[in-house]
Image 1 (cartoon, rainbow, N blue to C red):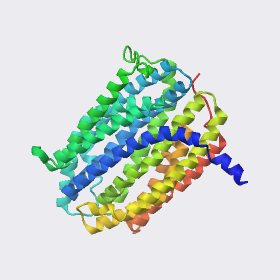
Image 2 (tube, one colour):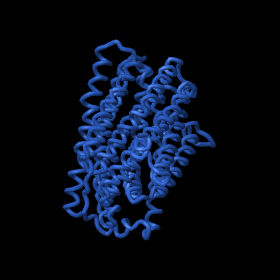
Image 3 (spheres, rainbow, N blue to C red):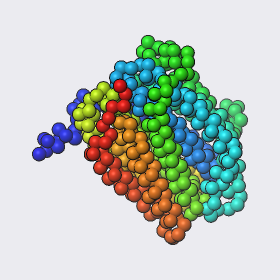
Length: 463
């Protein structure tokens, strides 16, 4: 019995080497990026609570845009991974073109929304209890930070189009290198511009925004230059700009699969923004505490995010190559492996919980609240890993409409109403409220496992 279970759920060393060859570079890139983001956050936090709160609010809004871009490139990426698995470089090239066109349109829309409604969006997070002086100061810093960050949205979407396509072809090292270079640039300019070192102006939160924008231009330049220098290796880039034509049948296919995915990512990110807004109505301090907790949690969450990306790529390539039985077997083992990895990362996050908030120059009440939020996130990390694995499995087979029902619809129908009711119509303390909203994800995992077991995701969407 034990041998049968081991054979069903545990892979060989070669299998895990193959999975980690894809997951680890993504994990390193995202980990370094989040680590530098954490240092960025700490540096701003050392300047003052008001500046840290302003930056946290804008980053929550920018997060919605980032996931919208992620949804656009991922929708086309489903086809890209299967085209590559089928040896069709032209198909990969066409999906790359589609990414560039769609992301250009979405970025124009995103910038327009932030310019027209940025003030109102920021104000939504400043409605909790707090002094008028603190609230107005945070609003001013947030507005300034947002205006600078808008400049970096263009290089961000371009680098995402290149990096996503490279990963779909199995190339994870180059995006990792470009990401490492970018975060190093970001870190250096953060120190120089936030604190005014070596004769640079002391800009505080605005300096953090300038540093981020510079790093995004550097990341885009590195990944673009390296890709075009290696056209023999990255065949999809040959002639990619000779025309922006994408076959109508592919456009139709990507839209049918990709629009639901884009909608899902946007709705999910919007739900996270609404959840944080629900938490913020309790008090001004909650915004700062959630920011501190999410900063360290994001560093550890790269574990299941990278494993989810690996599942999407590996399973997508197998389905594209017609290896249906292998895909089912690999998916079981990768899902178990992802949860096991996150048990370890969750333990590490729990160990860091009492110490990390002490780095910030803020009140003891905010530090204590942040510690509690971090411990909740650490305990719930395996739940997130399982839900994420289910999501990427469903997506790899092109079941993007199903992912909306599984992912964003679940959050909007179950989680958001729960947070809204608990935050506005009960006196439940913020930490138990936060825990309830995290644990409700268990239901999402159950739904996901039922869908995976049914096999509805097993399909080949490219010829």
